[in-house]
Image (cartoon, rainbow, N blue to C red; front, top):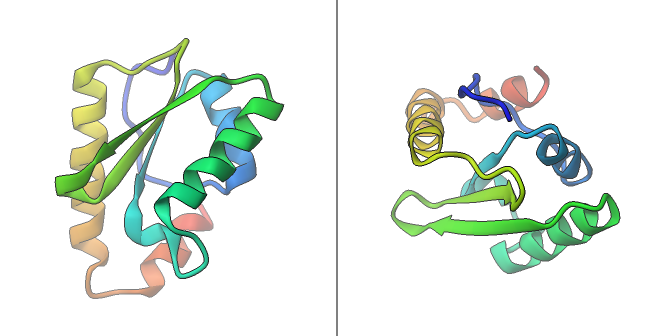
Length: 109
């Protein structure tokens, strides 16, 4: 399992299962869903892709932060790892609040 939080980056629905298989976990800002998906619909899409890859996922909504954690039930992150991930995304959110193009730059990394 990955043991530290890295710089935030975006992965598409199809790539989430691969990240989870590698022992990573994903925390998503709800604003990344855009206009095409709502949270329940996104969770169904993620679970469908993960099931095809043989990954059993769990979702933990973090409502006060408008974030959702997605994890492989066989490789759950620790509380400290989740806390660090949330802090990193809050920092990212603060940095990009005045720059909508920043999401495109981060997703290209």
